[in-house]
Length: 248
Image (cartoon, rainbow, N blue to C red; front, side, top):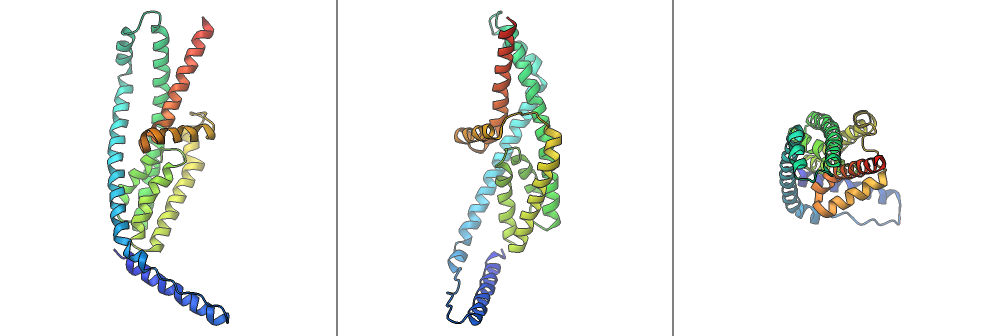
């Protein structure tokens, strides 16, 4: 890892600038910088980074499995709804079927839109990080794309491992990685997501933040990821219930 050597050189440059500043400003005494403590902490930081990356990889595998299972459940929704319908009293079956069809339709549209956005963000992130020479760019891209599905906080959570890995090759590489991720997020926020998602969710930003906070409290990153689909399902169930009651 080149980070200790880079940190030592960076400290020397800063102390040189401070000495030059003292020479131009008589009477000003600036203490030299000593970052040796930070250098001693670098092995622990590296170990923590590896542990965090392993945790993110494990979470990505679990979330991928959940997405695949959700896709197959949606494909087999007719049979599942029929079996669920037979378990309910006859007077509740029409409303239950209407609710199930509405929720499946909305979640299918949401899942398709989110997977499209995640794939685009993953491809752009992997290509950009590979272009500047960040190690593991092909593995980091899918992680960034998957965590990007979490509104507001996802891009930050997904970008931290990439910046830390790039930091091992120097501050300039870390800044370039950060710039790449910012450019990807700008493209996603201003062009990709508005065209793919449209007005699919319809929730206010405050309500989304409250839902994500509740999901994080209940299930961590997984809860944050599934907070919005759960909110959409509850809204759809309530909407169908109100429509059925108005038609009675």
